[in-house]
Image (cartoon, rainbow, N blue to C red; front, side, top):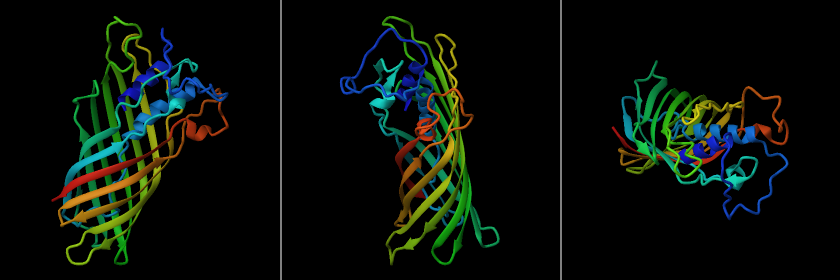
Amino acid sequence: MLNVLSLWARVVVASAHAEVDEACDQLAKPASYDEQVQQDFLANYVALATSLSPIHGPIPHKAGRGAIGVDVAMIPPLGCGQRYVLEWTKTEDTNKSPVVPRPRITFAFQPVGQLVYPYAGVAILPGGEFFGTRNFLVSGEFGAGLYLGPRFQLGARVHGTLQRTLGDIATAYDEGEPAYADLYLASSVGADLHLGWELTGEGKGPTVTPYLALGVTDVTTFFWIGDDSVVPNNLHPYLGPSASVGLDALFFDRVRVAGEFYAAPGGHSLPDPNAATVTNGAFSRYGNLYTARVRLAYEL
């Protein structure tokens, strides 16, 4: 995740080197290449990677119960097309951090009117060092679900995440130059419509809930480069659809395991009329993410 930020910083600041990964040196610069598109994509990509998707069904627990555990969000490696920078003159190694882990707690409250089941959750990654930088993440969610029949669940949720990364993200451009701390801030907020189908095992079997969540996510980013105080502008912060499809299972009435496929297929806000790629898939080029996320928790 944080090495992606290093690439983003170099998109907008000149470098004295022109190093190209041997795996990418035969890739020709496409006619649609645009520095602003590349910069905005990378800024949005990091924030989307830390957004708080459900990883649970519309009714995550029985009333009065909760769970404590850990989420792991996978970060797909970027290909050569997103690793070239500075007018396609160099590449960066962006694929060193494959996951974002964070502890997560969820709790289901007593039903409202014996029909609606509200719940809340929080996930925090403390501000410790992670891949050479100090990171702080805090996420929260609030939702409610109800049963339509004995098995079908319908729900809605809102979620939000704040991220702060402090460290030598942009890095020095020449050997021997001092390292300066850079600052990356990001937030994501969203809302989902949540559908699920509860499958209760016979006897001591697990309770499994396949689910689908469809919603919208909005991203805001800020990046300050410490050595020269440059603040690159994200002209197309992500505002677009998001979706999750997964399974939430409870084993032995205590062990909760869930996994999902998460997609943010494309979107942007504050469109830049001077961007060189108004057409040709600009909607998704300013930001998109397809990934998997898993959760392991102990039911309380």
